[in-house]
Length: 139
Image (cartoon, rainbow, N blue to C red; front, side, top):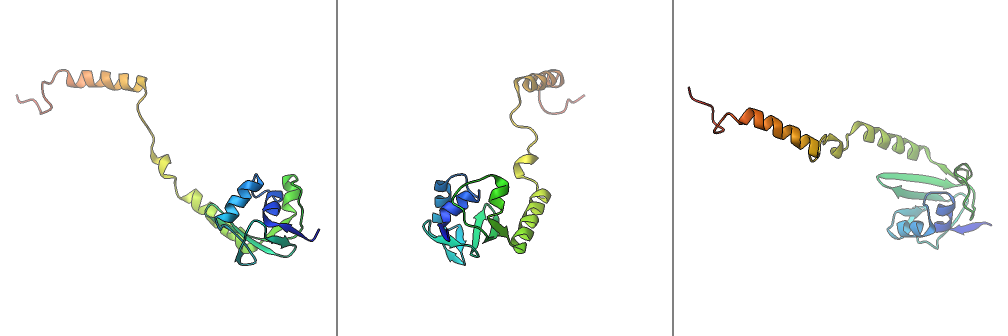
C-alpha cells in the first residue's frame, strides 16, 4: 500500500477518534498536506508533510508509514514523526498554559449554599439588629 486517504490516515494515527471527526476538521481547513489545504479524499504517502491544528497548537508531522488499521497508541506513534519546530511550539504553548491562570479559576465561590446563607443571616441578625438604620448612631 503506497497511498491512503488523509482522513483514514489521521484516524489510524489516532489524531481523531472517528473518521467523521477527521473529515469535519479537514473540511474546516485545519489540515494541510505539503502546504496545501487538504480534502478528505486527498491521498498521502510516506514522506509527505501534514500540518494540523488541534486547538491553539499547530502540529507539523512527517508521514513515515501508511496504515489503514487503527492500532494502539505506541503503534500509531510509529506512523509519523513530529518536527522539532512543532515539538518546541507545543512545549511553549504548555508553558503558557501553566503560567496563565484560567479566568474561571479566580472565582473562588459561586452562589452560597443553604448552610452558607444561614451563617450569613445569623451574622446579619447579630450585627444589624440593634441599629435602626445603616447610618452611624449619634450619641
